[in-house]
Every structure is written in C-alpha cells, then in structure tokens.
Image 1 (tube, one colour):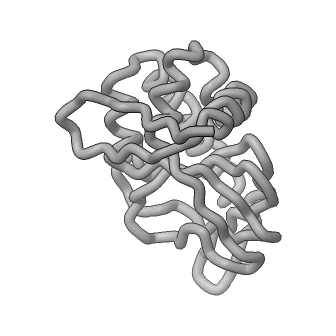
Image 2 (image 1 turned 180 degrees about the horizontal axis):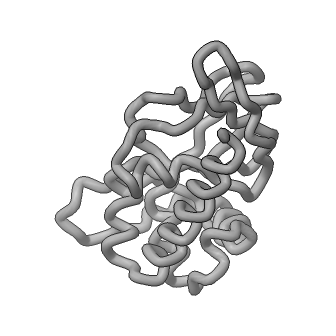
Length: 164
C-alpha cells in the first residue's frame, strides 16, 4: 500500500500532512460524525483531511492552557478531556469532551487567548488543525465558516453561563 499525499495548490502557509489511503478513508468517516463537519460534503471534508495531523496526550497532561495564545483547533478521536476554568483560587469544571467532540475554535475565531484549560482525563488522541490551516479553511469554505461561527457562539454562551 502506498502513501497518499493530497496536493493543495494555494499560496497560504497552511501545512499538508502525508496520509495513507486507509488513513484518508478512516478520517473521512470519522469527520462525518463530528458535529462541526456534519454539514460538509465529502469534497469539503477532504479539505480538512489535507491539513489535520494526529497528536497524542497522556493522562493528566494539559492539552491547552487558559490564557495561552490559541494556535490550534482540536478534534478528539480517542479518550476524554476535561475543560476547566480557573477563576482566581477556584477551578470550575466545564464538562467532559470525548471522541468526535472538538475544542479550540473560540480562540481562533475570536483571536483571543484560550478561555479555559483542557486536561487529558485519560490518554487522548486528537486530530489538530493549526491556526493557519483552520483560518484557510474558514476563508475558503463559507459553509464551514458559518458552522464554526455558530459553534463558537454557542460555546461562548455556555461558558458564560457555567462561569457565572
């Protein structure tokens, strides 16, 4: 079995990652189950697949830190993660994220620091889009942009409610 490199001809600084045909097929099926991507066509999903890379995090590891610069968007494929909000001496747990759920979009859309820390509750495997890749996809695909903005708005409202 060979390796498939999907070539994307654009002048952006977006990165491309080499994937085997089996990985491309698995990613296509996986992304179709993710709420944010459910409205996209297979062709539009290939745009996402061209840019994602896999990252692993160990139980207890901070995946992102509240207040840090947002430079990536994460989609969990295995394991669970806990977003927590630090408010002075208090820590507010915001829930649990698992496979097919995502985080990191708010910092990228709003161009603000991370609004919460996300900790690996167990070993976690994520697919990650770097900020430049994420922004390229948002600019290129109006449907994706609309879905991303709607998800970010809903999460901001939920965060505001839970942190009150």
